[in-house]
Length: 79
Image (cartoon, rainbow, N blue to C red; front, side, top):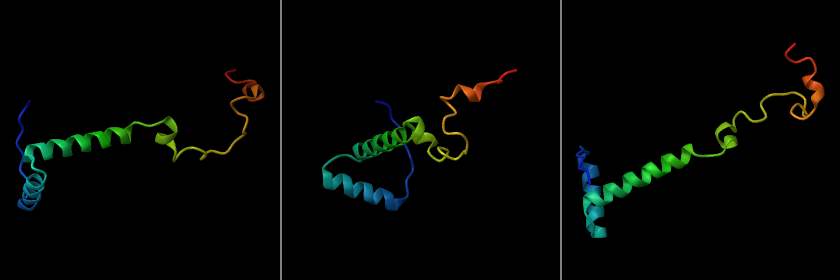
């Protein structure tokens, strides 16, 4: 296991110490759990379907409804 050190405001340290004491765990355990939770939340925010990632764009363009299936729209394309 690797070691890191960080500085926190006294108020946050007090809450951390109180939480650790109440749970009967070390401050390090509480901080590790908090980091793991934060990283997992951030990872799940970025993972999603293509629609989830572009839902603000879906339906924003007007045009024919059969553009992807009607070959008539492709007539003359690329000439």
